[in-house]
Length: 260
Image 1: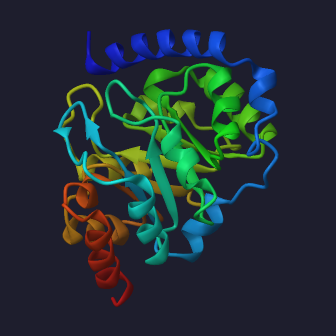
Image 2 (image 1 turned 90 degrees about the horizontal axis):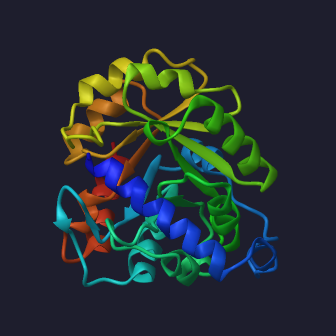
């Protein structure tokens, strides 16, 4: 089994257990379920384009940063003009949980992406109930029909969709209702990074689609390369989180790109 296979197997078990703990009706009655959502599409257009990520660990890197709290990090992300916040909610492989979103939702006023492996409609109601504005759909985990179905459900719940692709074959998962397309520079099966591969995929998308470069952006040079190639957004986590003070790291990076 690949790491992705292992994650999906475990995710199915987690969702089944969650359904037994909390019903859909209870999710719909939570405080955040009826709140107006923020648009990541608009925020990417009007701010830095960076979707800054809070991530404690990953299967490829192990522990990245286990010593900082979500609020201290994401508040700085917002203060220095991040377009959005990505928060990992997968526990077993990324060290996250739903409370990481709940704990910051009332404290920031920019979009939050619930970054997880979305395979069941229950998770979309769950995302809405914790205050997420955007959900991630990973093409390698889903069929094109599932992407269409989950996109429609997401929009019914007044959230946006970031579709993640990595291969040319996954371009067929795209449909005109998708809000943003993320192109993962890192292959989820072997975790190798290839920025040029992502550029080639981007060039096959309709020009009007907002494109987001995801993962494997390790320095200012990588960021500038992808921006010059026409990417609108940049999902970055490890670059900041690997520092003792991710907030300071983001401030320094943002000051460089915003003065160019």
